[in-house]
Length: 464
View 1: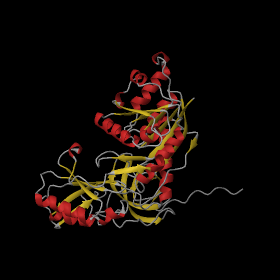
View 2: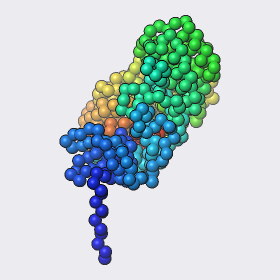
View 3: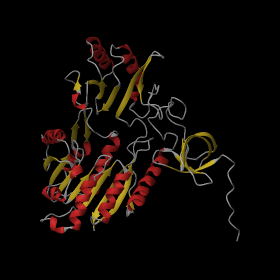
View 4: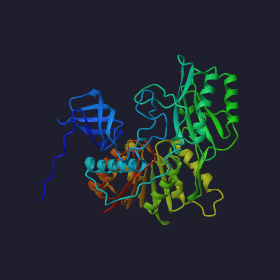
């Protein structure tokens, strides 16, 4: 039997990349065990680097030379992507094949569940994937007048910088939006308010492109006329003005088509304001809603609660399947909008939507008593922000530990949890599995943001 050969030592100064971290940096180890995070490097590659920051146990570095290239390395689709000075920081993973991006995100999800909470799903779901380009229907472009260059920049920030990148095209937004970047630069450059418009927020609906202009001073009549002329030259564009916070956003001119997106599988149309939270990727959102509800398996006789319901993205489709639905959100104003969306979608339906209520509740201060007061449900859909649903999971765990608090209440048989942060999902999964009597039956990633390190996921918990 031949003996295993020791791996050949690397030439001095070289590093071998072992993995990617959550920020899409390559992770290597020096001979003394010190961890090195390398911007731009991929697993399996051998590199030399420039160290930018040193700590006792780790270093941050930038790729200088590539001595062995990963088979998953691809040519970036955007000319503004890279490690060079002035490179756009909107994407971090364009140099990695999209399929490999998904595989790495799946590993991040599994690692978080296990290392943070010792939770291992019974089975892993196939990843939810969609278009790798032109997917981003929401974005926030920074605007800056650069006097030295006598130009206006409209785009994302440079990598690890407060400066705005000089981008002339963007491949992750729809093509028509990419085509408008240079005209937008020219527009702002021609306005009286060239120094006082720091941001343009993009929100695309199915047939309308909303552009929200943040302006620090009132706009002149001439500037308003230029905005209207821009909208006429670019069909489907609506200008919204934001003088202060998001609550001050107002449509420049009434009329025209409505900003909305459809969930055609359920016969639902969702109107929204451009500063409302809606999913960035509408292609993935449609698949996600369908997948989540198929996993939840609501029945006509059952009551379902949609926690963190927002505008009703899951609640309204649920009302086409369940017997009764309760949507709960933290904002009274948002709940009022959800009720409006429900009433609108109820009109003219051949099969009416199920009985549906919306309530406002601070979901970060849930208690067992409040959980009982909201009533028992057969199934839960949970879709929290990045902070997760700790208070909700803790209240459920407390009711499991002390059954005297239940007063006739019973826990849901199944929970489908949609997450935008694998760390908080793992934390909450630990509570559900180890303290609330559930098993994690299924989990998988949702590639909502291709070419970024952002990990969205979905997990299913069943009562044991």
